[in-house]
Length: 127
Image 1 (spheres, one colour):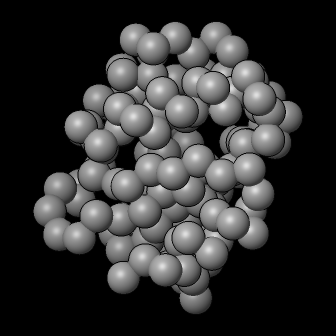
Image 2: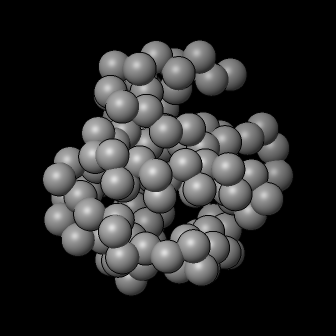
Image 3: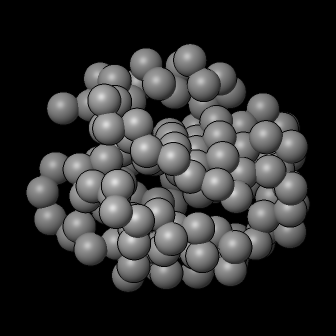
């Protein structure tokens, strides 16, 4: 799991591959926020490439959303956007659950896409 910043696009880009666990996601999430290039105004683009979410249960997803919300210092202001790109059908099914339940917990508006181009277009529309 890696991250990089695109200040010109107001983005934090996460690149994730392999087996995905809550602990690894939280470690990357925390490292990004502690980095000197971080901005609380960034939207998020997560690129899942050959990533397996098959072991992420509904309760694990809910736990991850709670942990991410608690770790996010931005609790007020306009909702930031988070686009997740995934072309694996099994993982997309898990992400549909993520997208539908995230609005109750996270401070971001979450959307799932099958291509990076579509995700970036949606993120570029953000206020």
